[in-house]
Length: 461
Image (cartoon, rainbow, N blue to C red; front, side, top):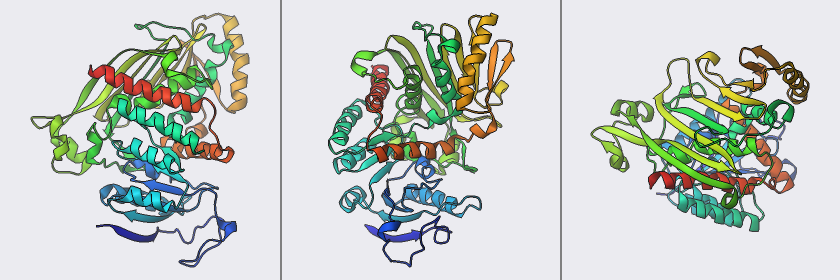
């Protein structure tokens, strides 16, 4: 049965208005109080939806219009937002206007109560939601992935064409660009005195490699994450090769060819790809989902009582002639004191830029410069060129070690993964103000999703 749920004033929302005049219940906002941007949350089934609202934004209305099917997913989202509103330090003041019903998407499209649709949830229909939203003239900020298979990629292509026609902006949430070591690796790769020229590499020895290890059971905002059961269905979430690897493929092209457009038909060649499954026991599944038994849609992935989730993948490809390798692995739970990890190497003619995040780094990402030339001349050139990076990132230093140099980053730059969602949102809002994305963003998003979906197609052949 359809439901109209009246505006939910979350804890503290009415007393923390950050500069807006307080309003009596039901009173309309005056024109001077109206913010230019208003969020529409559609089927917020992933915790990333709430993380977009962990911060307030100067140009975004505090009222968020939520359209979803009734159930635990939307409740979990609302609970997280409520906690952000009620936290003692820097509380938010979101007010959620919620509609639940099986016709939530049609209701959203007919109401058009906002102008920015945020999508972070079940990926099975996400590309459809993207396409229908931009067709209706709404801007879309979407969590990755925006497409999980070849058919979805074709639909995504059509969505970008529709967005251009309707003069709206479609953008995905690439948080890893804002992780400080990734940003610095890109900066240093652009300095010939430090990096030299990007090497071409070979299939056996790629010039760029990016690997990440993730975990199904983890803590978010200090609490154990409860994942929806559909997260473990690759038909709904997507395989690992088209999910987390989206970030890695994005970082490859963003770092190696900054601000350059990539044509996936001309510039990319998939060499090989493979996929494997992570195995979950019934007790592990219950721990992370709080569900006693497997739902029927997972029966296809069961062998005896073990759930096989195709969350792991590896792909080798060339990008403008440069050999790249991307791989992702999902384990159930990280050992105590550890977490998700990332490894990245870019090989230059003068030095390799390597990000490590293992035991020696206390499981925090650290960037290293490992020169191919150990002479004094390189060291002098490095010191001179590094001053440019210090101008952009004050406080960053070089520390000499046996293999080269460690880039020492002050704690102020390590704001954590959750904070990166606000950074992406703020960048997107800058683009909305000027009415366009950088010229390279759309072709590179298309290239990224062609690579992931084509690699999955090859891995299944």
